[in-house]
Length: 277
Image (cartoon, rainbow, N blue to C red; front, side):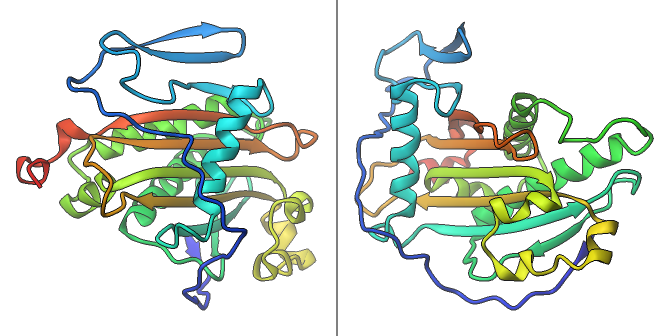
């Protein structure tokens, strides 16, 4: 992977202050058994132990799909964007690639990101997923990886990769502790052709790179943004972290993003001394 160095500044993105608390997480007294049932284009996660064990009980959907899903999606993002939660960490990078490079891509970080151990871990998961996707399609001349994959397939594979890495032996104690202290995680991934780049990127550092020679070498892109909100000092300790993952293929007529919402139970992988804290 080639990385273009970029200057970094540590600044918060200010937006209209709005404390949204209508998405609440309730921890079950015992680890619930979860089952997934499909209804139309939506998956609803149900608990067999307590009806309120995990709130909201929301699986996969498109935005807009139904009023409840759209409201939850909007509230989740407004909470992370609100200046009331100044502790939110953000990291964003745009990856440029072309087929036939054996998994190689060019990574350009955005100015203004202020990441953390948790955002770095999640961003690295997405980078590894991207590299594996490109390397696995290196010999496919008539197939464009990611852009010709279904958005639902791509979103699910990223989320599964995140969970696999989180519970693998490769995760460090520091990374696991950092993730366990998160209340909410939002991962937004958008893919497309470079000529669609201005639709999702307002960072002049990235958009103005569009010299003709560069676009000819790297005509496709994946834009990744990660926002995390840690537990507050008065928030109860929980074994669950809410994660919302959005994947959108901008090339396909600006179709609505595919959304996955899940509560990740990381309690079983935490060291015993951390659980007692």
